Amino acid sequence: MARVKRGVMIKKSTKNTLAKTKGFRHGRKNLIRMAKQAIVNAGKFAYRDRRNRKRSFRQLWIIQINAACGLNDIKYSIFMKGLKDKNIELDRKVLADIAENNPEEFAKIVEKVKTA
Image 1: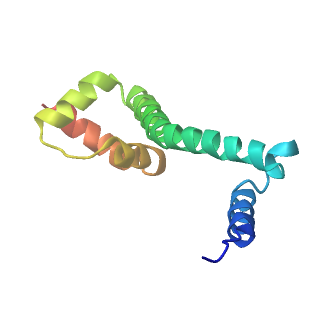
Image 2: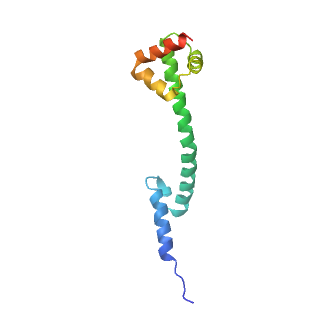
Image 3: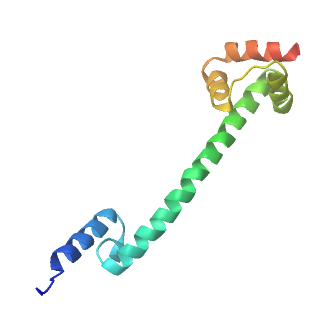
């Protein structure tokens, strides 16, 4: 049976690993053992932070809506309850955008909610 020489595949694997760590600092970008560890940790943080990004955007939208509600003399919680009671199905992302870019439209929505 012929002998299998693995140099080509090892070089390919190493090259792919080091390509993933491009831009990392110190030995994490060019030492294979450290690069492998760096890839694993980067993957963990990327997975975690994809979820955290959703959380932080929701917080931001709530803050923006609350500020706009304050300008229209209504509490955030009462505003959101009124939206639900009136069956106005706008999510927080859209409401925050309206509050920031079209304050007069947001005021109209608040008036509808206040009549509830």
